[in-house]
Length: 515
Image (cartoon, rainbow, N blue to C red; front, top):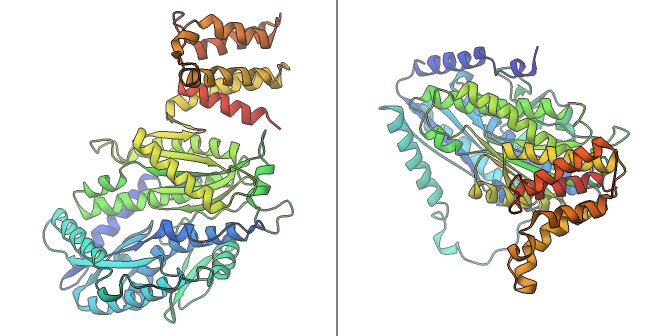
């Protein structure tokens, strides 16, 4: 069985979603009530830990927190239906920090009590960083009208977070203890979850996800009724404990550096808002969530990644992993390729580009003692930069490139790496090319001369490169050198053509050839 079919990406999976939704709509109820829940403050919660102990504890806590938040939006709606004695088929969508269920209007008060109890413990376990909010509306009118009412009700709930105690909203308060549940996150939600077969829930701890226990339990896996979860962890050389970022850096080819890769589907929220029916909304939500969990888990256990990459989370339309810098670049390109296939198969009938492209960003640790939280935050900031610059791209080594240009940079990187590794060319020539780029950027500042005064003649670059490479009769090396010159200078012999892909290729090759 291929991994795509195993995770419900075949047309049969889509048909199942439609059948479920169809059965859900005709369920025997007096009046149907759509209940939507969201978890707010996820980014702040993940970054609130210290993460700088240096022994791997900070990384385990952050990864455990991300798994807990991911599972909360899967477990809570399932537990709600189970506690109310309702069929599990009434679960519409879940995951990615939110969920949607259908319940009878008669049990709306009990559902509110359930979620209020869960919210109290969610705030306690997150030291006030997270907030569970929910809103609902009757299933009356077209889906566009229902969705509009849901959105308006949810916005009112989010705007009224301080309404409970307006007089004390700005009063001084003690700093929350963010480490109170760090042991639970590091051990239960990270180490034990890696090999768990199921997760559970109990009413005495309404926000605590239990490993292989609880009053109600659900299997983890690719089945339609299972909870999909990407949870691969790269282990140390003995296979006993999770590898720290420092260990992952040592496994990188070239320079020993680790980093964080984050990706997000472009305008997926807009695509969901344009859904014409509840069936379409749930179908898109379920397919994308399961795709991210399935493909990320499947890719992580491949030979090129399983010892070099650890999954932080996979959501409804995004993901994050950390590991060796070289594996993260390769994984980013593979995930983009697979996502393109998904979008072609799933969204080809939908007009507009929304939800059909994905943007990613890679952030490298600036020094050996950098915390995972700080690099994770940096990757998030770079992802926002990439989305503002041009969606459907990759923020890589200081530049935002379109995905097709990333391939050009990879080819240039291979040329430079081969010249160093196979033909014994001194890595100094990479520095010479870098000096060429840096001069063009700083010429105006230092000398007041424009960049064209110094670099408008391509042979200046060629002469500098020839000086470093020297003379050679090796035809293959000559071919590589000429290809490199053409890539950097361009075919226009009248002026130098500085391209972002060349700068990225240079940084890439430098990382690859440095020990």
